[in-house]
Length: 479
Image: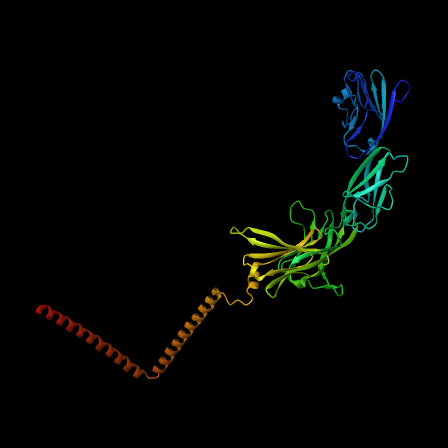
């Protein structure tokens, strides 16, 4: 081992690097003969060496993760680069530069990482996270914790942090930040909590427009075996199970997609009614790789939304009605129009805390619709549409039946009258035949009389025709 002694210049520094990253161990020596120097990097044994002839040496049988960039030598920079730092790379390093004099740099490499105990954790269990520093500094180090980049408030600044009842809210990227002497570092690791991935909260709110379909999400995480799962509606009065809507459908089995490994137990209400509002519960019993079993559940509160209409003097009032508006802070009304290419255009008309919009009857147009959006601060919660057909009826509250409907009614009346006349004629013919069939001889006499009458009429017409022709010949002869 090289030590600092008289006649040599000795420097010592310390760096802290996150596990898996690239460590740069500094060794800056300003030598007048930089290209004719020998460089030795050692820890317990030689890590990297280059003699004055330019030959490089590395340990035999090890992958080359360490190197010194040669172009930097001309600047007096002999820093060692270690790719993919591991715990075993931590410790004291010596950089010896042999030129016109001996220059020695001592570098202490500390490697930090975040670990979880247990590694696989399920909802409701206890998990301990530790900021491991190798080698451990001789004095206490203040540690700060971040979750997905946001600083967490913890009771202590120790290297361990415990979550006693972990939930999906604690799942994500955990980072520990340390500052030791002049060294600063940050290490991160992903904490995956097995259970219901969506929704993450135990109580979630879903907004559904009356008349449309809505999805109640319930997706379990991968790597778990769901022994059983169920959906039920919870009574708001007693908390006991209640009957599900008639259009309620749940997805049983694997999520769509060949490569998906998440179990999707989401439910769908195909056509939302106002009476469908309330709380629904999705529950399932899971079994992890270690054999632990745990029952998890989610309560999903369905809020129904619709636009109601009313009249006030010469105005039309639209109201955005929600079955539970406790989370809503603002409402926005937009006018929906379509051009000749059926392209929709939305124009914001009003944004306020009021859920009502007043429109003059004169401003109501057939080609318009209205959209009500509701927000929680700046976050859009949902929207509901007021259809154009409804607007047309609203503008003409007591308008008579349209021409198309009137024509249809008249046509049906004429057809009915024609059918009645045909039936009446059939009935008369039937009555006459029935009366005649009672007297067969009379029927024969009547038939002969009718035939004789027809014969006489034909003869009379023939004689008249011959007489007219004879008179015409006489007139021509006289001329």
